[in-house]
Length: 416
Image 1 (tube, rainbow, N blue to C red):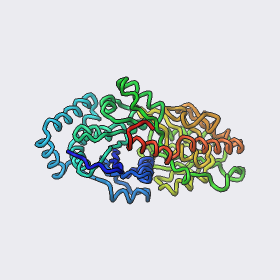
Image 2: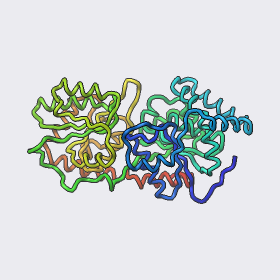
Image 3: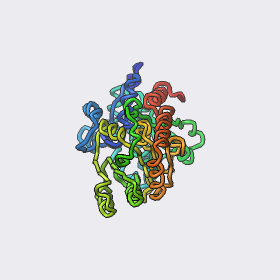
Image 4: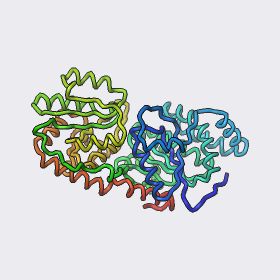
C-alpha cells in the first residue's frame, strides 16, 4: 500500500470511545491540533451511546469513522489484505494475539479490534494518513500497532492513567514499534521505562494534557465572602471507586459535625451513584450533597466559577485503576479555585502542596475535612492558592502550548 503524503500532515486520532463526555482532553486536543495546521481524521473503536454530549463534539460526530465490530466491508477488507499481503496480515495477527495471550481482557479486546483495525488500515492508507495517534496505552494503542504493521504508517500513543497502571500487557511491544510515546506525567514515564527496552527510552516525550485557559478562567468576583452563605465544594468526574467520592462525602459529614456550613456539588454519573446517594442520606446530608449528573462544558465552567473549593479525592481502586493527572483539577485551578487533591500518581506534578493547592493522603476523609476546614476559615489562603493554581496551569498545562509540542512530533519526528 502507498500513501499520498501532502505537505499538510494528516493524523488519524484513535480512542476507545467517542464522544465520551469525560474525555474532553481528547476532543479539545484534536481541535487544537487542527488549528495548528494538521488535518485530523477520527477513528474511534466504539461509538459511545450517551444522552449528554458537549456541543463541541457534534461536528466531530459527522466526521468520525464509526464501524461495528464486524460487517461485510470489514470482512472484505480482511480478505483483500489476506490475499494481497498474506505474510503481512498473518504476521500482524500473530504478533497481536501472541502479545495479548497472557491477559484475558487484552486478548478478548484483540479479537474484537483486529478485524476493524485491518479495515481502518486500508482506509487510512487510501486517504493518505501520515501518522496515527492513539489516546490510551491499551486497546487504541494496540489497534494503531496493528495498522502500523500492515501499512507502515508511523504511530504514537498517549498513556494516561488506568490504561497504563492496571495492566502493562504488550506495552513493551507497542513502545518498540511506536515512533514516539507520550506519558502525561513523569510518574507514567517511569512506569513505561520500567517495562520497555533501554534503547526505546528516548522515545518517551513528556507532554501534559492541556486545557483551554481562556475558557477556564476566574470569575470576575472572587467570592471570598462565605460568611453569609454555605461553602461551595465541587467535585467533577465519573462516579466510580477510583475517583474517591465516598471519602469526600464522609469528609462532608465530619465538617457538618464541626459546624461548617457547606454545600457539596458532585457533577457526573457512573456505577457508584446510587451507593453514594444512599451514603449521603444515611449521613443526614441529603440537603447538603447535591448530585447534578452529567453536565456539558459551559455548565461546568459556570459551576467552577461559583466554587469556593474543588476536591479530587482520588484513590487506587480494588482492580488496580489509578488516576493520571485529572484534567478537572487543571480546569478548577485555571478557574482560580483552590483545590484539595490526593497525593497520588502524577497529581503532585500539578498540585504543589501548600503552594498552589493542598494534598492529602488517598482515602483519608479526616485529612480531606481538615484541608477544607482550613480553606473555609481562611479566605486569604483560598485567594492565594487560587491565583497560584492558575499560574501553575498557565506554566505547564496550557492546551495550545502542549498541542504545538505534539504537532512538532507529528510533523518532524524530532523531540519538541
